[in-house]
Length: 283
Ligand SMILES: [Zn+2]
Image 1 (cartoon, rainbow, N blue to C red):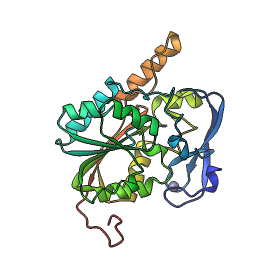
Image 2 (image 1 turned 60 degrees about the horizontal axis):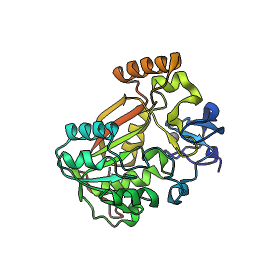
Image 3 (image 1 turned 30 degrees about the horizontal axis):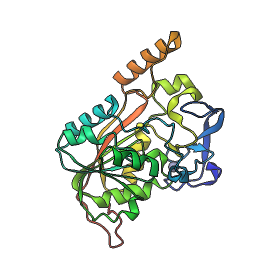
């Protein structure tokens, strides 16, 4: 489907193109794509619109990064960040894939439950002894205010209905609870110089392309959330050889230091507002 025929999360339908290119990273080759930016709220989206059903197919997880149940430094640093922002409690990890984030969170005292719609990833998680349910969030049947923390690590950009999911998270979080989000930051320093070569576009999969201010706008319009943390940090680019690799490393390091990293790390407190009768989060 053409992305410019769809309404933005904010409801507007007017876009302008900010990038036109070819994606050839993480197992993809020569995938033509455009990035369109909403004229009203500035949120960017990928054209063509990725097929969100792809994750439910068995072959999706194979040969893709993070398909294996590993412990990795990346998950360790995310867990450490979450532990700095909030006390241990009951944590729901949405789009937890094979659950690599779970051991470093469990180690820090969190009671972790994951959900994912990818059968192959959930199988890997189960074999590693991690609590991940093969379910859509809305079919999981969780009761309101039943979690202290909700995490979405590189998940929100894959969703066709982020507003609906964020409103459900507002229902699931206890008042004062925290929502922790990581997404690629397409306005980080590396994507600015790398254009369509940047790894983080993942154009065949990412419906939305965020930057700090549009992530904040999308979350705060969807439910009763206050920003607790918001910054462009780190780098998604793997190390590479030669002069290009050196330039990438320098730009990534400087970007990370000055808030221009190519991932947005954000945390939001759920305000203690009441719910409306239809179950949607109040404002
Ligand atoms: Zn918009």
